[in-house]
Length: 281
Image 1 (cartoon, rainbow, N blue to C red):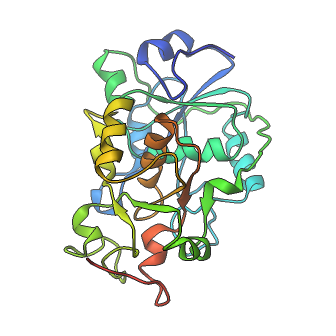
Image 2 (tube, rainbow, N blue to C red):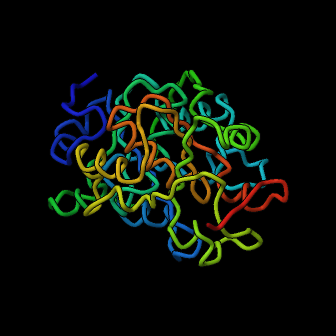
């Protein structure tokens, strides 16, 4: 397995030097909110890093659930990514087309499913393009591989687990916008109540990012401290549908937090249930 100096990110130059290494695989995890009018797959087909495979968040999911892109069973995840030619023993380099957004969810998914070395391309596809590096179009295929999963159930939380954690020692960090958190604007998905969980802390995921890259560890520490978030205590990250919560999980991991989980159903589930407490103050 090739050595990279950072445990979370690699540079475009590093990836270019290792792009043909059989122990390295590049994964395009582009995904956009429905209202964005963009398709992650269309972005990928139009132009991606040479040799990259496309991870479809909506397809590599529990498609039987009414909630969007919920984690699939470990065996289903393994079959899907194995069909893409991915092994859990490879260095898996994940990126997306906007810099840092949905790639964090893909990074988190591989990690909790047992991949040994998952990193993000610093700055994503925009950084690759800014370096004048090549793209390829279409949908190339790779030979299938065997991905052996080792699922970490402690990294994900259900509705019942989050509800039971309210008012306890676990911090709930909400990655949605402040306007959505405080109920000042409607949810983008119809039929959901506006507001937040009692006791939750608002930290819009975009505040952890600057110029398409995650902020430095020092800046993240300062941001968490300003919001009263203690990385040494348990955290459950939530958002609209479990995507941007992964950016918060990534940021916490960078500063050394070790007890971080994502509420997979997030507000799409919470805001749609009559038995879920919702506040706006």
